[in-house]
Length: 205
Image (cartoon, rainbow, N blue to C red; front, side, top):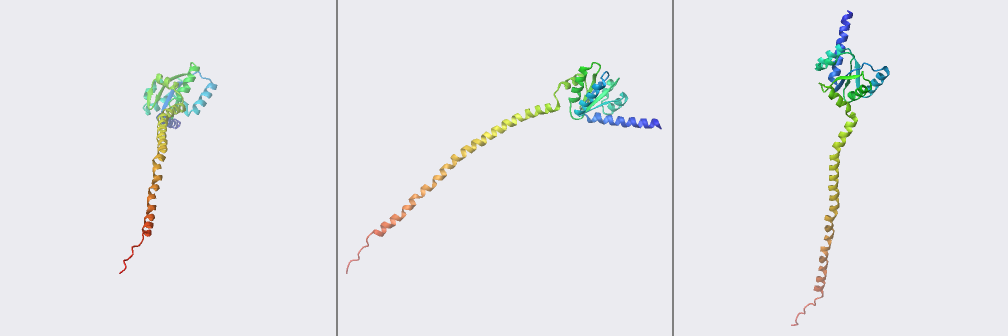
């Protein structure tokens, strides 16, 4: 009876870890041997703040979960003391943080990693560790995208400004039109001359 409960518990654990593998865009496998309790506490805190899940698990659980997630190539590194960092939204965080600790402690080392559902080699993990943070990368991307947009906006504004300057000059002649109506006012003078002409006398019979 006890063995059945233990087996069921392991199955649930494998299923949970499988979901972590599948739901992460990147992850790093490390040998945490030699790290002090104080450093381990600081490491976990830093990873947690970066939204990285860091767990120490039995290699048998990790192997089964990795196979379920089609990452069976990782099985070769699931030996000795093993911890895995899972990241759901940042490709570089786990590699960068764990890479820094590996430099400080000789016995603490990176064993492997995965990214976008595929196993990657140590060289790739090391490259990820050298990249800026997600926020810095997004900022750099925004600057690149905004540069052409800002240039276009300035060009459009220049066209608008030029159009506004030309508009008043085109409307000016329309204001002089009333001057052409002046000759019409002279018509009464001709009528006055007609009234002044003497009437012809009728010859006497």
